[in-house]
Length: 123
Picture 1 (tube, rainbow, N blue to C red):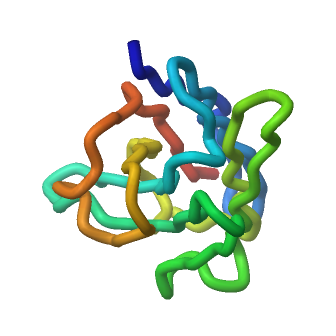
Picture 2: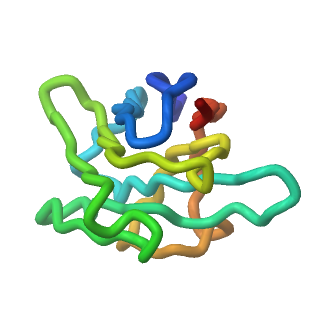
């Protein structure tokens, strides 16, 4: 069974940091592109970052460029999203998702999803 489980969300003050984890089972993270998405209340789900399967190349949405870093640990079969300099605009549920092809920012093209982890940035 293909499964993704996110963790690491929580409450953080503006300017703070969080590291989200996405643990995979039933497949390995180096055989699938793994994307991070987020969805704020009343808004559509949007892509945040993605790491490709073959060479581990990464890409970021404008909202995360310079603040977020995606990485993977194949020994733990886990993908991480390090988020720094968080602002209230980053409040959302964060999801990771997998697809067997290349990275894309379109959520509908990902087949496996985690349950999400809440990130709240507030003083």
